[in-house]
Length: 180
Image 1 (spheres, one colour):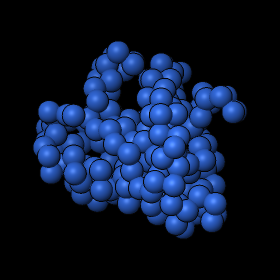
Image 2: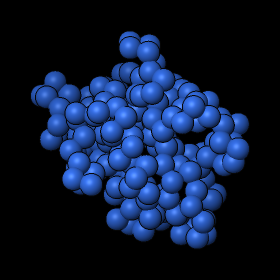
Image 3: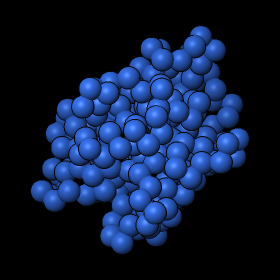
Image 4: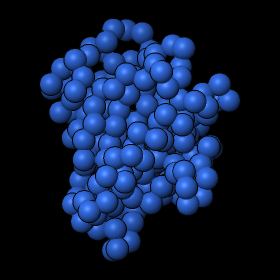
């Protein structure tokens, strides 16, 4: 999908996001969510930061297949969330949680700064979006995916991730940011 990132980086992005979703399903959700997956997207957000400047980096179904019958809904939600987030950047939004409408528009897209070595040494804005789990699990899995990418050289701004978790008071997330 993306010609900006190498095949190896795209595979790593897929693997790290899939690992994050699988962890949330296994460790933080109840038995009724076991085997579930969802749709993941990653975007580069260029200046000026709005939906017209979202550059797709990657998209894929991740993790389990128990809810594959709802794939088309999750596909739509996985694109709606980052568009809505990018439309609210001027209000200081860092998560689609900030513009959610219960039972209509959901959390699950996050925006953070990082250095992606393949793209140079400048920090860039990235949006991760996931849909397929309960909305706070979607958000938590994307924060964990960003943490995993940091461990693989993306130099993620942890202040941005902390702001996301602090803003939503995400009770599903359990990780190193809690102690930061």
